[in-house]
Image (cartoon, rainbow, N blue to C red; front, side, top):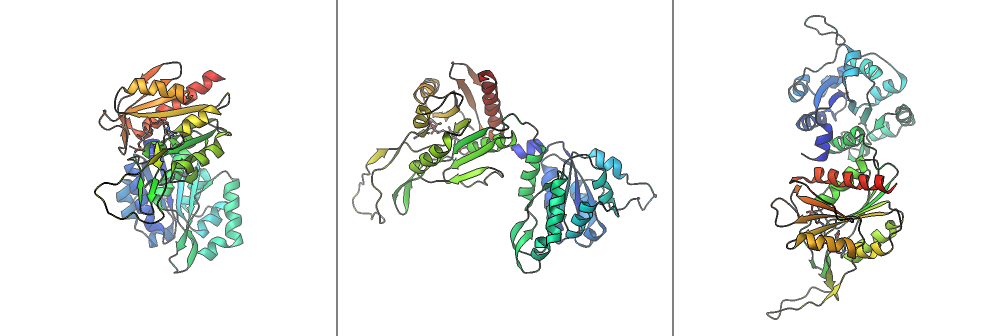
Length: 407
Ligand code: PMT
């Protein structure tokens, strides 16, 4: 289970669906929320039913869909106050211009509006409308009002709209909505006002325009750490080598290729960072010279002279100031603990996270990892094999504990 799933599990989510062509995406959204372990109840406005059937959303949410103040079959009341109090989150997705205007001005002409006005939980909106409707000053004023009420707006994307026009107004994709919900529901603020720098992924060291030296790092461990730090309230700066992952929302992102670039970027951010976590698998060596043209196949053997890359953790360890915390990783194949302890010294780290390729399910590429956290003073805590999202939480907890000790 990834981090977003863990935060969403067992949460009670009211999903308001309004009249917009993007209502079809609500089906995916419900499915993803239910899969993540949330209990979902869907409220539809009368016009939403013209875009997607209640049967679809009832089936996917495993709950009856509510749209009227009373139940047609027995006249019983659909209690909006109870619904509003039941929810951990009210999410209105898609949010039409009409419902937006009603929310901004307190109209109460359907069950969704009555529930919105009764809800005490956080409220998030994912607007969906044509570009001119979205850009209209009246829509923008209404959105400002919702923000001023303390609600959360999930920005629409840009692209082709149902009208055939291109522009801003497409409802955010369900995956993005899920991630925004995750941020909204995370309530630890242990790293509030802290700046965290994370290096992640592999580096790629060019040999010629088509080839490079690299390693198997997928970036998963570093990106999970970025997510957990962000959820703990930190301002996160993620310097990443090339990986195939979505950049966590709300994180400052710097994509790099070679170790030199990663070093330059990390160096520029480091002095202001309260915590730096070196997760990247940085190539220790790079070709001494990069051929400007593709190297042609000729002899049976080819030698490439390598030069040492900067050791980013070591270099920044040398300029580290009091109060800054640095955390390294050690990926070992033999004499793991001894090498890891040496790295604490040589890189001036406060702690090191040891993972070894001898443990199955640990290290590169897996969604899981098995680590030991070793502190500068020599304490070692072993953790079982866990999802990388959970490993990231263990690491952040250890960092927060260390910060508390330093105060
Ligand atoms: O990305 P994934 O597929 O999720 O895999 C995660 C991981 C295995 C890459 C990660 O858990 C990990 O172990 N990262 C560090 C890998 C590594 O390069 O270890 P090392 O023992 O060679 O380096 C020790 C430390 O120095 C590391 O913190 C490393 O980021 C840092 N270093 C190393 C060399 C260098 N030139 N510059 C550095 O900053």
